[in-house]
Length: 181
Image 1: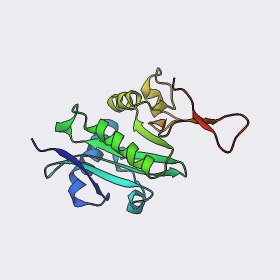
Image 2: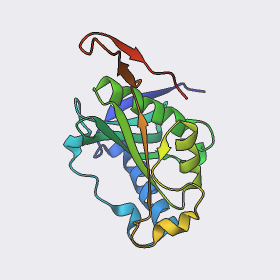
Image 3: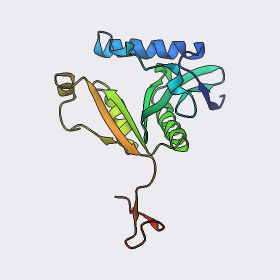
Image 4: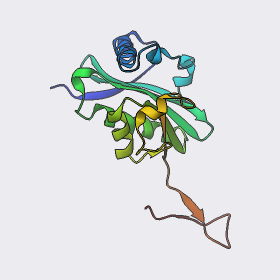
């Protein structure tokens, strides 16, 4: 079996057209309407140094994709994370999110923000397993978030860098890491 590798690309790369079309088709199947056809902004958002668009390839086959772009000065938004149907439950999405986080951290972002849909329990589970903090009640019926005032998206955040605190008395020089929970 061929090894997998991440390839930096752009959202308009013909290599990923089958993946982006399949993502949109799956969103339409799960949610109806045009849920999967949303605009993601100009391709330049996903170019270095502020962003990146990755495809995970095995040999010549694109098996997964993902992107990050600026959400705000300190936060990268992870998006377009998708795994080809026949490659699910093999860790592709896990590796993709971890690589997007790594690259966002190297680009200077301190936290990550991402959303998924209320009908994607596998994505919610992945986010929770990776230490993302949900910005919604995980114990509520997910369908609740499809009704006003909500828009069907479930949001998560995660710190990409260790939280630090300044020692009293010397605020300019001594920084210590806070213990993790």
